[in-house]
Image 1: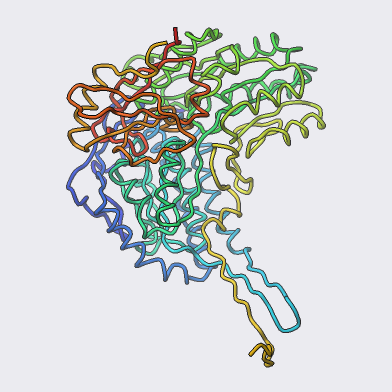
Image 2: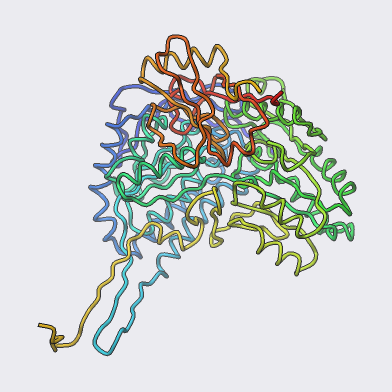
Length: 501
Length: 115
């Protein structure tokens, strides 16, 4: 094991990053940024307002045209250079991200940062290979379709994967030739600046601008601005609706990713043998604790078929009890701190209503006090509830390390329970039978059905929601088109008049 | 049955100060991830409710001249209606576009089973 020291590469204060340089906030105010690891403040960050957003939009508009005309090969090369720079600094980025968010460094080292690096590389490649199209309408008439950048786009980033979620949005937008004004979450405002300190010299000034601050003060002026051609948001339903309302005023498109209540379904045949596959399925169950459950696709409902219910659940409880909780900078730690105090309080409020509704706590169920400097941090025990799908803990996204378990009779019953939710972002299906896997996967109303796996997020696999889970598909080349206009040139090569007039 | 939504004294106090700073305010209960499953507080009318929403309460708060409306999507209330909600306040950070976040606090829902 390795236990990293607390990172020291932070500045004590971060201003806004606008037009390639750091700019003080118009209002002169800053807010404190605590680490969830200990609850102690480690830097302060500019508290942005509408004036700062306007300044960032000025810079972005100044840069957008040249960036959009930059040859694709050159834009792609810049994205690859960003990826290279991140690769060279993977360890320090991972430590920074852990300190910022509270998640275990084994995840940031093996998932967050490597995935972010690969995401830049993927879109660097995808945009090189992207082609327009032409339609030969008749001998003399051709419809050409060109991809054009939207111009300046606004991006509002969540706090659960501060760097990775920013990169999910930045990479396709930049590849497609847009300039960006990005607002990080106020819970995790700093790690993006550490990333910028490594890569800012690679980008022309104004192509990426970061305005920090609170949603109501900085997010709203960005989302409601007539000067952005599109808004991309990851968050929750009410803010998603509000952003759509703002966008409707300006007739601008949005892409939204708004969460889920993902079912993870374990058919009887998983337990047909005590082998590697069953072991993998048990790990798949325990994935609800990944990133402290702060994942939009957290497998927060486990549906276990009746035939192996008791045995599989007992093994799953035992597996969950082996999850090591500890200092997030220790590479042996599997679950770290929740990202903020209010997130901790919300999770505890759900542990309370779960018990009131009669759900049975099979393990966990409490706040965890890890002692020493960690006593001030925000830790929750991995928790398994057993109950019924009508309970609120089965229907609402707790965004914590909490899974609610129930049983099902057969495939139809599993699909019925799985789809009995407002959301449709992710799902998991575990079975040794390919026909069952296919039928369940196609019948579940969710944008992604992990089949005999869970929580893999490779570039080139489309990610997005059905139902109230949002609009659009990230993580795939199709996201390029969410950041592009289609220009049709309808060209006649005939010298002859039509004869109408 | 009891009121579907009530306020703790701390929540009422925060509503008073937000009303003084921002004018009339409203709530819409959010679902989904990140800052979701939490009540969002906006200037009244900032969030446009519609046919897919239900008005759960018009809260009377001492010192606030008008009732404070508390809304939720109808589909979500279908799943919540067997519970009663108490709006509380905790120290915190961040909340979508909710008005209280810059104050370093966050509205929080505490739930109990309807009698």
